[in-house]
Image (tube, rainbow, N blue to C red; front, side):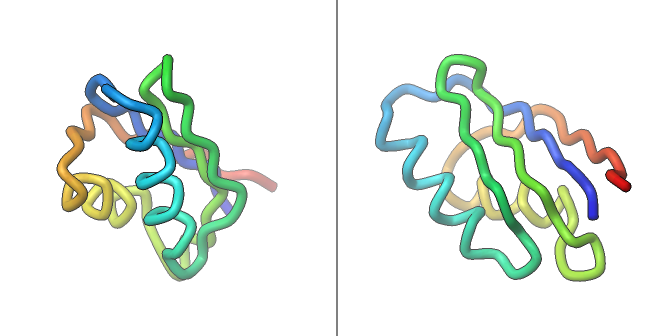
Length: 76
């Protein structure tokens, strides 16, 4: 398991948050998704054998949002 943090461009409305959370949560291998509107970040726990931070970045980009940075950290 790993924790991934995606730094996004500016989120302009609370419905953006819901849309991103739903899309990321629906990916196989993703659990515990949190979208922080004011910070412009998405945090999620992922199973790296099923999904990567880059995969989540693509999902968010396809929704029309900018992904500036992706950090993945292993969790024991």
